Image 1 (tube, rainbow, N blue to C red):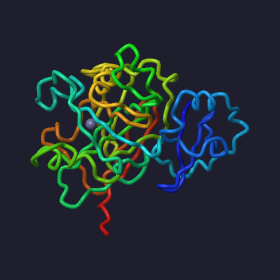
Image 2 (image 1 turned 135 degrees about the vertical axis):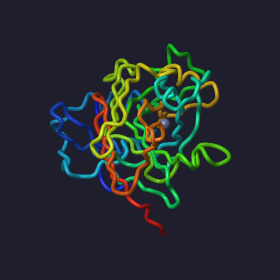
Image 3 (image 1 turned 45 degrees about the vertical axis):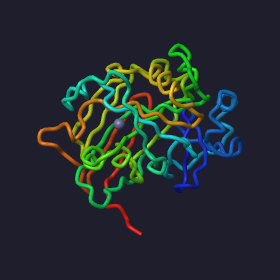
Length: 283
Ligand code: ZN
């Protein structure tokens, strides 16, 4: 299934994409797609629905992030061998784990803010994993059974605030709009091998990132198992699994985003996103 949320930011309703690509409204079936409705029982109930009986959704309406009330956005750094080489950094011996504030989450085609004082705004197309069942000390063998689904993500990053300040990366990773998710939550049954997904990202129509999850240093099952030794992963938690090569920081000379730039990104199995960069509004 491909599930989505639509409507004004903060007031989204749930939906389901039918086999012909028609958006259908799910609000008569579930209140919303949240940590409470991502478990195997609810997903099995949704899979049994006849989409033709659900009302159609206006195809022009805004899409929100495909999961609401996300509790945690956990991200992995330098998780592609070819990206680590581009950054001139050695392969990590263990997953590099950082966090993004959940208020960074936005819809797949929302505008991305250029924050005040930001001079090094960068892009990162990624595979995002959405947890459906709590995971605490799970084995690599069992790890994927805890996944509700996958979605496309852009781990937008302000490099100066991430890397040139003291302390943790979260400062350059958490601006509002810096975590577009979607368009769809693609349920795990439709992604039999999360290590065979091609990811791409263009800026202003120019190819920037091209990669495949095959070159991850630590695959999805390893990441879930590893993280579950340090924290209890909860339904609705999102794990960003790292970015393939081609980020702006890795170019010679570096290329950073300006207001007016347009990012387009995608993955065959997960859909596409498009974001225009705008100056952040201030109160
Ligand atoms: Zn990232």
